[in-house]
Length: 149
Image (cartoon, rainbow, N blue to C red):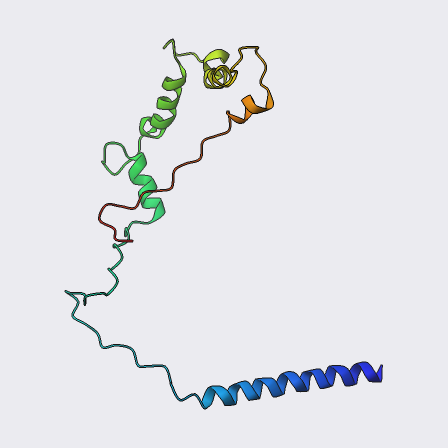
């Protein structure tokens, strides 16, 4: 037990000595950090200076969400405005327009995807055919036209 305590103590002394040596070297550095450059005029950037980032939207996330839901921009959200995205999605699925959603209409995109992947038309997907049904990855967002990123 005494050997263990002596080992821990000598290890701590070595770490402490290394810290003080490191601090001593850092204080003797001949090239201190240069002072920050003087503030330039706000109107122009010096040649070679990086461009300024675009200004961020000042609205909060909830304000943007409210603005998307407020279809007529009157500052109030009616029940019809709140239902709008769901009604639009329902109308896309209701192919015969009867106002009712049959199972075949609901599962239509899945059936179309299956038919497109079944290359040999045997009503069974093999492993290579099934790999064609993988969800498509979204393309990376394009940089805005006025952004010099």
